[in-house]
Length: 367
Image (cartoon, rainbow, N blue to C red; front, top):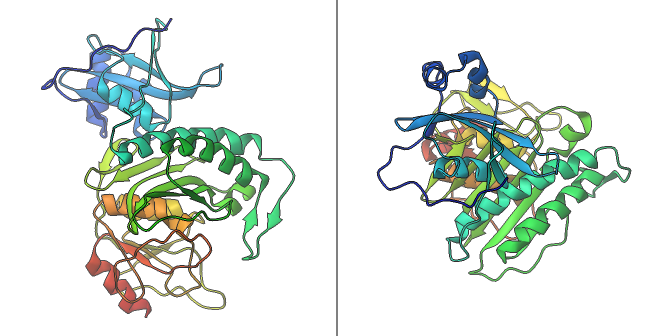
C-alpha cells in the first residue's frame, strides 16, 4: 500500500551518509541485527548503498518493480522513516520513482523538485529519470536491425535512436533547447541555457558487449557547464555534479586530484600516445563520458585528445560538468578555458585535469 509523503526530517537531526568503509558496514549490521555479509556488497555495488549516521542506518537497493517502475527497496533500522530526505535523495539520484519498505510493503513516491526550484536541481532530477528510461530502451533495442555508419565513421545503432527518444521525452520537461548526437541541432540564443545529450556514449563498446557504455547529459549556459549527470549503464556507476554544489559518485562526494594515470580516447592512427613525464599509466575505456568522470573523481589525473582530431560537445559535456563541479578544469590546446558551443558537428580538442597546473603540464608534454 502507498502512504502519503510525511514532513521532512527536522533541522538539526543527524544526517545519514553512504558507508564507505568495512568498519561502517559492520557497525550498521550490528545495529540492524543482520550479518555484515548481507551489507558488504553495497561497498562495491553501485546499485546498493548503506546509509549510516547517529540517527540509525538503512540498507538501500535499486531494482525494477514488476510493474516496470524503478524503485528503491529499503531495510531500515528502528526509527528510520522511508521519507527521510537522504533516502529520497538517493532514490532520486538513482532515477527511481518510488521507495518501498523491504518487508511490510509500505511505499512512498519520490517527489519531483518544485517548479520554481533552481534549473540545475530540476535538470539533475530529470536527467536521472532519463537515464533510467535509456537503460531499458537500449536493452530492448540491443538486437534490433538498423545499424549504420555515420559520415565521421562512427557507429549508429538502433539502440542509439531508442535511447535518444527515451531521454528527450523526459528531459524535454525542462523546457530548454536540447541538443543530441542523434538529431539536428536547434538554435540556441546567446544567453539561453541548453541541454546537450549523448544518450548512449560508447556505442562501439555497447555493440561489442565490452563495458563501459553510458548515458551523458549536461546543462550549459554562456559556454559553461552548470550541471551534469553521467550513468555507466553497463555497471550502474553514476556521477553527478553542479556548479557551487559539488560532485558525487554513487552518492559519495568526490574531488579531482593529482595522480599519475592519464586517460586518452585512443591511440592516434600510426602514432604513439603522447603523455607528460609524470604519467605512469595510460588507460583507454572507449567511453569518453566515463573517462572524464574518472578524472573528476580522482581515479585519473587527466584526459586529453589534443594530439588527434578531436571530439564532439555531446561526448564531453556531461563529464566536463561533473569535472568542473569536482574542482577540475578543461583547457583548449592554447591553454585557455574551454567554452562549450551549441554545435554537435564541430570537433573540439581539449585537456581535462584536476588542476590548471596538471593540464598545462600535459599540454607541454604532448605539444
